[in-house]
Length: 132
Ligand code: I3S
Image (cartoon, rainbow, N blue to C red):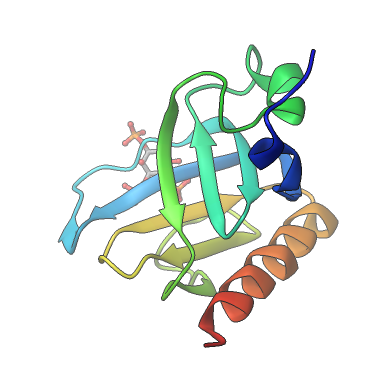
């Protein structure tokens, strides 16, 4: 199955299942957190959370942007990433990602090793996009 050239030239930085919840939408704080496990893809400076953790996984590795509908896509340009403070969540290993348009997401994984590799990859993505 051949993919168009523009698909091939895109680099898949990272993909895997993470827990995430959206906490603000374009500057408006959301009242309730809804954590869910989500297939997550970091590709071409964009972080995409898919709707679920299972069904889209195998194909997403091959064609991340073409498969099932993404639930949230976060443009890393102008975004910021920090470790979430304790008042944001009682969970361990929680990252807070803020997009330039004022949306916020908490991203979590029980494994410190796994969340650290995501931290590194997302931070690197943000940094690369900040270079003019
Ligand atoms: O900020 P909160 O209200 O402590 O967040 C918790 C709630 O979203 C809770 O949902 P219910 O209110 O439906 O039980 C979640 O189950 C918890 O995981 C949230 O807290 P943590 O600290 O896990 O983010």
